[in-house]
Image (cartoon, rainbow, N blue to C red):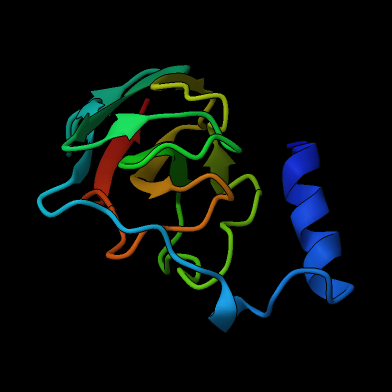
Length: 144
């Protein structure tokens, strides 16, 4: 999966000293009661690939990466990770951490047969989780 240009800039800026160390990155506040969740598929459901995943958000809005609007963020889908990435740095991009920096609220995933876990994390304008983090329940699906 390709890393977006903005995220590459953040990595280069961080390691070259242009960007402050992780503990100094200002966290974007999330409003009380904000929730992110997976609308579909449902926890425990058996599905066929490609799997359509619909994202839900309550108490906040969706805005693309790079856009600084209060009480907004964009989705990151965590696929088959037992341990969540650090919430102190921008979320990485990998096959297991999929960014939706254009503000997308759904996706189609090609998944092999078997059990898979899905979870959402909302990220701010620089892919940094909010404070407190807005994280969905982890669901398990079976692909046949």
